[in-house]
Amino acid sequence: MEKNLFVVPTNHVHQFWDLASDYLNNAIQTGNGEYTIDQLKQYVAQGHSTLLLIMGTDNVCYGAFTVQWVLYPNDRVCYVTYLGGKGVFSCWEQFLIWIKNNGGTKLQCSTALPQLIRLYEKYKFKPKYTLMEYTL
Image (cartoon, rainbow, N blue to C red; front, side, top):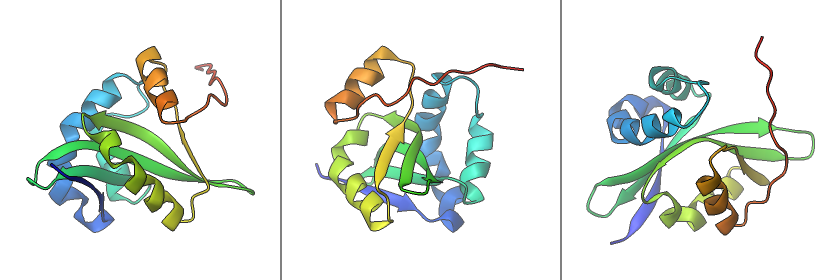
């Protein structure tokens, strides 16, 4: 079955959120408390993040992720904030094309899970920094 990347327009987030929420909530559980699922939905609905779905030709959602654009003087980076589901990388080339078509020059993400590090390396991600944090 063919799967396609579907970028959810900001004004349609509420219509499609139920397709993504379980996948994204599972991803949030592996994070460090930066978002709740309700906060993420609000962030996407306000246009601070973009929701992307992996949809099959059977109209089933197989995965979802959210991204934010980060602007640097020399790069426009598409930063993956949350990613969940079983079909996310089935639309990898479509995702890369979407990034390029939106002016992106790099793709970044963060994870603390060794199994996800190995998965990202499979898709040619390279470690850039180790994120350190101090909580006040």
